[in-house]
Length: 383
Image (cartoon, rainbow, N blue to C red):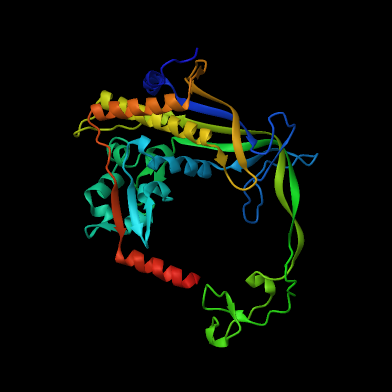
């Protein structure tokens, strides 16, 4: 049976369903739906290449990874700073850049936040920092109001200095993209120098100046431990000369591409969200419904925007199905559109505010002096 009102369906789902599940069929942007096979460039990992199932006798694989769980989470997190979410950005200002908590690898527990300050107070000492780092499953209100992405995508306070009792938030929303019935391919890499510079023609040195890259002046050269200028060994070090063709495994032909993503409502029901110090079923339900609406909106909005994963992996959905999964019952289809997901999110946000939740205004912490010096030292080493 198909649901009618999306917000109403989510309110009920947070009480009894186990998950919101998304299954989508994808094709490359340069392909047609009726193509028998699709060519795609999966991510390449150092010393591994592409991640695929064991090779079969005929040289093919059952599946290959096109988008990892971590990468999928990052793509959804990019949307969390949009105004529709209703939460002001928690930010860090450092070295002339401003980064949102949704851009930090460890979210509210990231070292960049830890090493930042507000009015001279370290992040973890401020009222906001304490409320975020001390939040637990029975008191998750601070995360809901300031950084709901931590509740959806998980985080671990590995810098807490505590052997036991450190905050660990398992991911509630996850997903990945896979290609099926796979034949990996080889690719030849080659570079032709338009000036035909010979590889042995370079006789200069590595330059201290990043803008120069290299120099023929020993005085401006990078020096080794003995104070001698560091010579260049070949033209390719400075981007000149030919590079001969080399074969490497790169890319794959696949019969189909699928996005599989899910939001665990069971996980969200483990959390409590006190208002004015009191846990109530009404407040918990409002918070859980907001998180469910947010997760659904994130998945659908990212899908509609297209999936530009990397060169050679620009993917679009040809078909997508969102369902509510309830133990021992048939899946229930969710009627999902961009308008309905936005409307459900705004209804959930309003309901959460009505029971007493106060979603954050933007807040910016500034890098501490030691963090600024660390960044400067790192910059100088990379020149």
